[in-house]
Length: 139
Image (tube, rainbow, N blue to C red; front, side, top):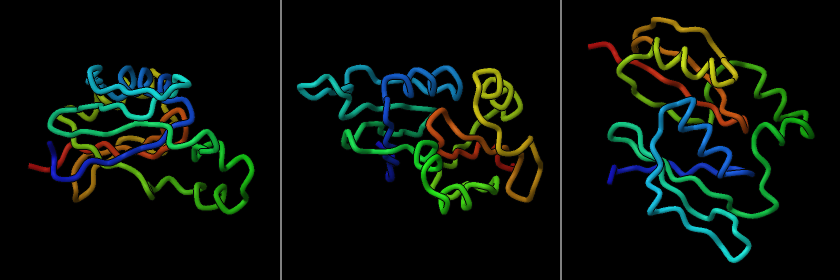
């Protein structure tokens, strides 16, 4: 188990999990998918390399970042820049291939591939508006 495990909420976690697997290359630990009496996913675990992310729906009243922007001017404003705020940073071995895969699966690309002092990276939003940065760190 990693020292820190991000927990990300989704309005429709089943659809989000399937998409995260296809677009970003995660693998679900299907033994850890838990549901409440209404069939809503209350906990799921995704892995990528040595990293792990927990996914769930915290409450039926939860709004994803994408949904929240539709009704909140402040959220639209702070989301107008391509930066990853309240997001996830993921190290990948082949960022160019990862970028092509995510783009082909409909990720909202916040930036193109770029080289900077950290490494080669790009920024994207998933289907519910959560922001991700994928980077191949400099050696």
